[in-house]
Image (cartoon, rainbow, N blue to C red; front, side):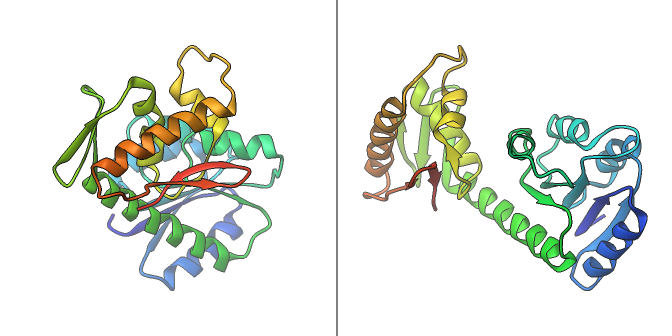
Length: 221
């Protein structure tokens, strides 16, 4: 189904209300109220985005998100009444693209879905202009190529796969070192400095990686 939004929500009235708002946009909503029905439908129809409630009958939203990420990068926005920070981080680390807490404004939900879809288009653009080769640890920009160290490559990979998303130093550390070693912030900053220089060398001095004060880093196109 082209330009479809899958709304997975067991509160039927809320799901129908969201569907009414999406019908006013260029997207066509489809409703599912039970977690066990989601995976097969997604594989068959490939929606543009999924609005996925965490608390569902049958399979819960967390497990659904994990399973979808094994075969698809369809944008997923998790919805929940829980506001605990741990739950929020858990949801995003599972591969969700955004996290919406109840109660919410339907207009805000529509706007957030559109924002995620715009970011998805940005990601597609990024992979076209900044090409990473996992076998050779190289990155190419407009036919200019540079070789990275293994650590630098693992540092760049999440930033390049999700441009404009802010990654904390802790998230980047987990991605860089599979042995879960303890690394301090200065180590991350040192690798970022070297990576910036290598990327600048193949892009006429362009500064790709932006520091976000008190939080971490993000890659800007």
